[in-house]
Length: 223
Image 1: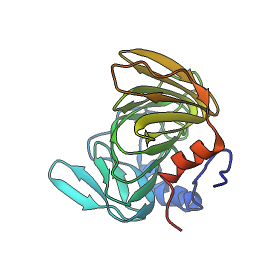
Image 2: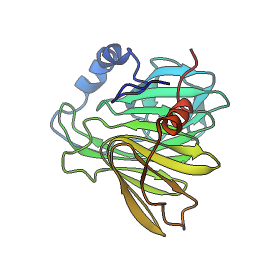
Image 3: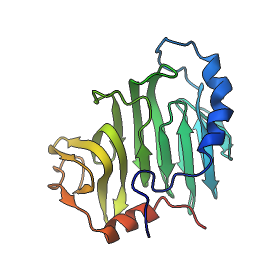
Image 4: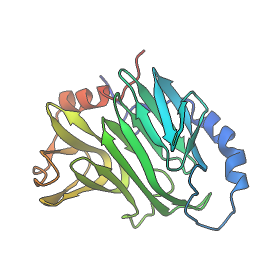
């Protein structure tokens, strides 16, 4: 599978998403960075395949194209499902099958760079493409995984189960993988495998194109 250098599965719907979200952005207080309220719209679904749900307390809904992504919801993809969504800062998130993701923190001032984003992916594979919330100084975006915390800087990163282990690869940018056993830093094309949250990540290595393609296949939509 051939993959473009920056956005491996970026859909052509981004331009329409910007239009669709313009009212949301305009309605936010310009120049004031504040944590989002529980249930507040912070993005929108670009693509969905099979069944993907969003859960907030007792409210469970099936996600469709153009549906809002709300702060604090648990996004859950079911067997054979895929989800691609874009947050209001242009961060892109893609989930493979049987994945569970929650956005735990989102602080963003519209039309500026910087803020903070924290999310948890407790199951399944994901692809993260950073947006405006990534401050140039880095260190303000984190992803919690079953095997440790990813510190993000200017990044496109994939993570998830692969070859009976949990693996992470930085497609572009820099990611520091940290758990109670230690930490490693991954740069472009470098990946690691982590046995569990108490075992240090393996030393970074350059992934083969075949291995990278198998990873990307876990979050790629069916034709």
